[in-house]
Amino acid sequence: MRILFLGNNWLAWKILEWLRAEGEEIAGLVVHPPEKQKYGEKLVKCAELPAAAVFDGSKLRDPGLIEKIRTQKFDIGLSVLFDYILKPELLSLFPKGVVNLHPAFLPYNRGQYPNVWSIVEGTPSGVTLHYIDEKIDTGDVIAREQVPVLPVDTGESLYRKLERASFRLFKVTWPLIKSGKNKRVRQKRQSGTYHRTRDVEKIDEIRLDRSYLARDLINILRARTFTSYRGAYFVVDGKRVYMRLNLEAEVEREE
Picture (cartoon, helix red, strand yellow):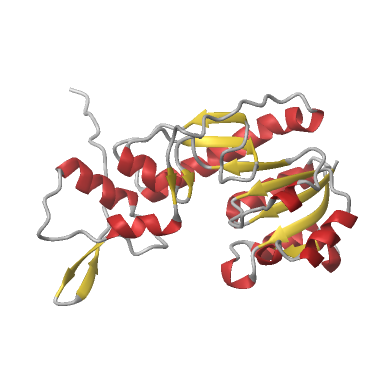
């Protein structure tokens, strides 16, 4: 099959690397523009494609680019941590559809930051392979795997667990997708949860004069603990003070 791979971040790079090692035909690549790229250079290097087969994800609504993709006659699209919404005119170009790998246990945590919301809202955490339709993370489910959230998990530790689970699920499920023997289970769109990128702004500021249940406050702080982010904060004298949690479970000692 001729594959158009759409990806960003470490997980996309590792899956692309695995597909190449398996001998799959990566015939095109879509990456984020430079200012939004994570592991972009590694993705391009791994794909080993001519410049004409590497596309800018921010321009996927451009009729000219859609026409270029049409002429390449891809069979299937594979999306991994790709942030741009794919419109019906693009999705229609793939006879075998476009498959997305989402680090959430759909229908819970559609959209952004599923690792954060599983901790804050107590929703099931996991990973899902599904077909992309005209909405966000609402397409038919191919396979999914639940990932437990431990009391010592932070947003970062849960994210890493979801990365590993995503990679495992993809490797197990890809042969079924390739052969056309995978399942398709329709999602109930009225169920589950959905969050936009900006929704975390509603929880990031800890208001010093507000009452919180201890559990809720701890969950916010640990969910927003991530090395590459400043985390939740409170404001004193007009200045933000950022917080992170260091969590360590008690180890039982033998008598």
